[in-house]
Image (tube, rainbow, N blue to C red):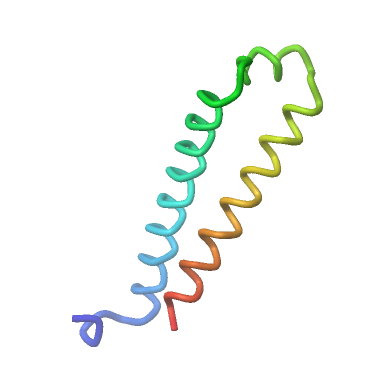
Length: 76
């Protein structure tokens, strides 16, 4: 099947699918973590709590890096 598709089109499809997958895992990770902690993440961010912002940033960077590596290594 992949022999019939142009490699450029196949890489674009991989990138689109990988981006959607990464965003969905980031959303899911944020929702799960929001249920674990004893405070409301959106409320704390609205108050300007830098610790919560850094925590969310670190979580997004970690999930994004992990998914990027999985998708990138899957292209070999």
